[in-house]
Image (tube, rainbow, N blue to C red; front, side, top):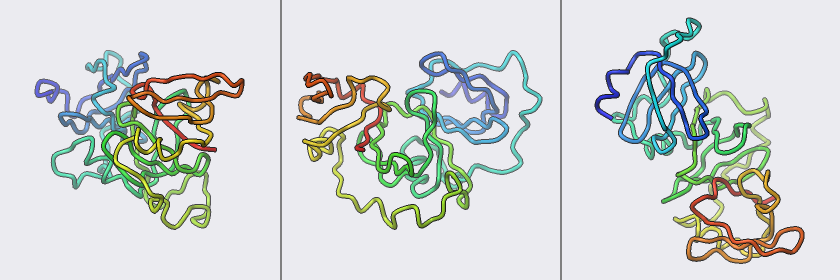
Length: 221
């Protein structure tokens, strides 16, 4: 991405998969992540999700170069994994699937997924390959203005393993909701997770096999 470095400090358009476009000032750039300031938030986009970036043809004068610095500017050379590790315990907004972002905080980062604690969905597993963006909030801000008592003292104490497939194996027999549950075929009781496939029994009793690589998020009601 060396040539893209010429865009630093300029207002650009970032197009993600699904043709969703974000506009803002490019404030940092690494080999596998970039940081965009949209006038309100710093958005960290994994390069995996980016289809195109270019100078904005229509400049938004409401977006000015940020006076404040990103919360995680002390990382030195920026990278996707460093960003996730530095965001642990920081209340954040993430976008994975659908139209609604999630709010909560990262509790653990593993080989191919991270654990995310949401006050709405509780502990979720998010695939590293499908995170669209991460936006850390002010550390004093708590989602939905909830009190700290609404959050567990240490949600990261839940036993977890390094890969998403192995973690799902540990939850065989439990009800899972995949990718937000918009597709009824992605809600069911987990039978097995093996050989890069997840087998669910749906509400109608059907057996469905889902490719693990395409699963974006997991939570257990």
